[in-house]
Image (spheres, rainbow, N blue to C red):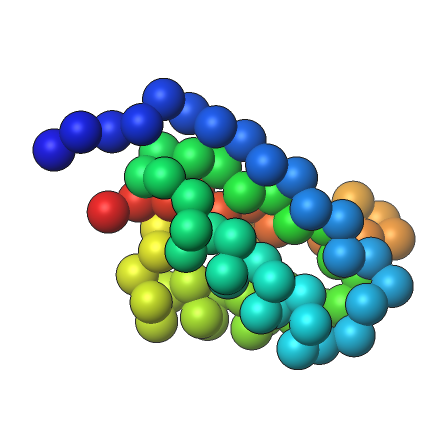
Length: 80
């Protein structure tokens, strides 16, 4: 198995309503190479929950969430 060197992408979806950020985030993770990291900034708690659920359902990788006060940082590490 070949693993790509770690690449990091950051997308700011603050102020956007779901499902827009959800679909954009999952599409970007889906297209990213294994080993990459996608960071999503959103202030929509519903989107955070849905991103975590969809990433798990599609087995895209691990998801962590950091509460930054007025927004959430969702970190998705693309795995096989």
